[in-house]
Image 1 (cartoon, rainbow, N blue to C red):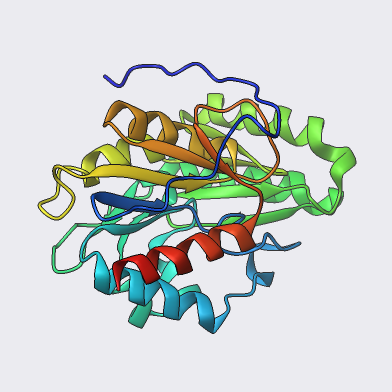
Image 2: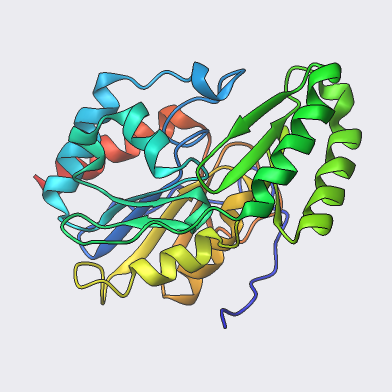
Length: 258
């Protein structure tokens, strides 16, 4: 069992940027809010060619040691980034319920039947209220970004359906998600046992509360977490202010490894 790292509230000057040296690290990145800006709708995000090129270069310099750890499914990651990019990266999708390592076979998990039942209930709840329901391979998210006044009601309904159908309730930025069991921390711990990552120090970049399990897992494994965005209670010991700062850090890492 992973140890629990208490969250801390830090002033904006308390958390330094992550160290520049990455030769002995395995790198883990959340996607939305970390490598790309969050959009009004999940399919409204913009993935710039420069990001794809940078991820490819980083993967070439750290073979098997660059991973995306996302709430999006593997299918969504392939669609957004293209298999030419995702095929070179280690992937943990659906909050860790799906794993894919280049050159290795990982059977897809079964989508719980209860999730389809709960998803239909979310549709019925969302439609008259102008909320957005997003179906994923191993989860269904209820977004209230466009109707923020519905936050409390959406949270209550998500909790009710999760309890009624035996599903995991995941809170995120302006959303709640019902999903199959799994978390980013367990996914990172599993990936650190792969031959390419074994013996390395993990560094996980993430912006949301859904990334805290990953920060804890990295701390337990002798590495650390990097909070992206404004200061808040976190288990991370480093922080970068925004997506642009993460992209700048990646560019410097590539230069160091060249």
